[in-house]
Image: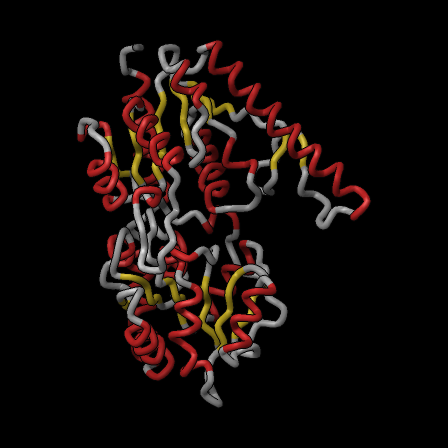
Length: 375
């Protein structure tokens, strides 16, 4: 079987989407599938493309214009290459992994059907923080593609349920293939993290409003201000406006932002008191799975897909209830036996989300799509 993968996920830098995409390509190739990714250059180390834009970081200031120009041109050339392969119709199936959808795919679906990986349906939703991750164009484009896909692979039951509530497609065309733990593919062991506190909680991922970072900081303030209280470590550097918000709460020395690679992320999980992940919405919630697999106790939300991933191996809270979030964090600090119990339960729970099972499930859907009559 020959599969064409859209290159969009690699245009936007280091992200969970890029990591997922390259993991899928590796897994399919290992299973004997011919996988073609028309990528001139990549903005991430996960997939190099024909040449690299990320080898020299930071680029010299005098060459930043060249890097931006090369990035823009490589994106245009990669898309043209993808469009040309679509038009040739030499592949059995096209696999769309990115959250951005290229209309050329639908135009050429009579030549090869496509399988669409649906990571989330957050474009359909509002959240208590008041943020709406939606625009009419993005929402309707997502649903348009879902209606015309040979298969829609949803990363969780919650995502599938939300999809079917939003668009009319046959139930059998929307299939759940849960994401496996991808972190071991990129970092088998941890590496040192300079400046890491001795006692800390970790907050992993972007800090969009739906991720509830501000709420986490506000909720934990009484705990962080204890004389012997822990620190909150967020992945990625803190922007100036975030530092100002944190300073207003008197927490400048108790909330840190640290840039880490995948090996350092392993260390963050392994040494943390616990992961705090009180997101208002997740299509899957990969940090919860990563943390559990490494024995890091987890506090996460009781909404969207997160209970489906965490099961009973984490402390589940209402993400809008600051008092409940604070109580859960205090329990992890004050009850070492609870941390031990959650660490063991998390490892057992994470073992049920294997990478091999994910690839096997995707293969089944790709084969089913390839056998779909051309339209």
